Amino acid sequence: MNRKRPIRARVSDEEYQLLQSLRSRKPAQNPPKQPLSLGDRVSDGVAAVMGSWRFIIIQSVILAFWVILNVVGVIQHWDPYPFILLNLMLSFQAAYAAPIMMMSQNRQATIDQVDAKHDYEVNQKAELEIELLQDKLNWLREEEIVELKTLLIEQQQIILRLETLLVERLQK
Image (spheres, rainbow, N blue to C red):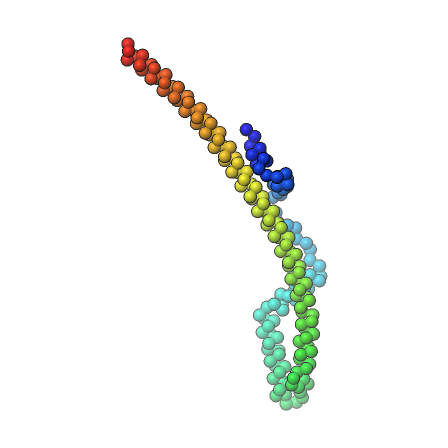
């Protein structure tokens, strides 16, 4: 009995080709990492800084300090209430921060898609390998059953011979 035949008969040519290509790849091999461009590194750095509690706390302290100095400023109010200059600076910061963070998120989404594809291929390989193992176990079980049946028939024949010998001796 051909051991590859059961799985080959149950999977499509595409699945079988995928299994063969996945088998040639080492199991722990991860998808290759693309080198980061300067823009990627900058956007990741900005996103990491602006997305941290440290940045939020420092910015909150600076904003509070700005407001307090301009409300109770003894010397000069450089940005009196309603803090038009502060609003302009925060709008300027938001105008640049949002697209930079989006670039970082888009790059991360691309990395996640590559990782998800790799995970899917690994899962497919695992599924097909499990099917192959199940087929091999079934084949071994069938072989064992055939062997046990053969042994059982031989034992029955031996028992019959022994019975006939015993009957012949008792008759003598």
